[in-house]
Length: 238
Image (cartoon, rainbow, N blue to C red):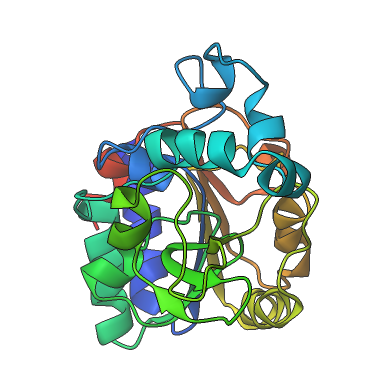
């Protein structure tokens, strides 16, 4: 691993337009569980499949059960950024990092100090009334009894992309452009199996693609450098 780390360090030192594309594995080292691992949410037993409970139609038809699941399993509050989040924020301050493109909804990149964050699946930190569009905090949603309601009586919906909903076209465009213009793309903590987010890697036109993930991904053979290690063990050296 040392020779690969030395190469990655050299690439980072030379790069001026780094883009980091991250998934759930970025936040697991902060204590936030992922969905698809052996111990993840998708492998736990619930009354309905998790994919059903975090769908748009389930939100509309069974809001009480939607929010019961959402508050317990999808609303990570009180967690802190880990070394990966902090290193990325430092790279941005140093002028090396153009953007963080993330599939995560926890807001830990911003908490670490990153400002150029493109959230493909939204954020639990933004919540709005479906009727009058008034904004509410994640704490309000977390502690509201049952279905969180606005002063006007409307349901307060998290600004996260549910199943059956489309990703924000503006965010997708900015992410694709950032990846296209990157001279170093680091993809980490993602299995690259969730579409359309996984397809974003196809926009990369540079020559240095790095994959860091505990398990193999469908894009390993296309990468210039691959680490099957924890993100922390790699980023602690950067």
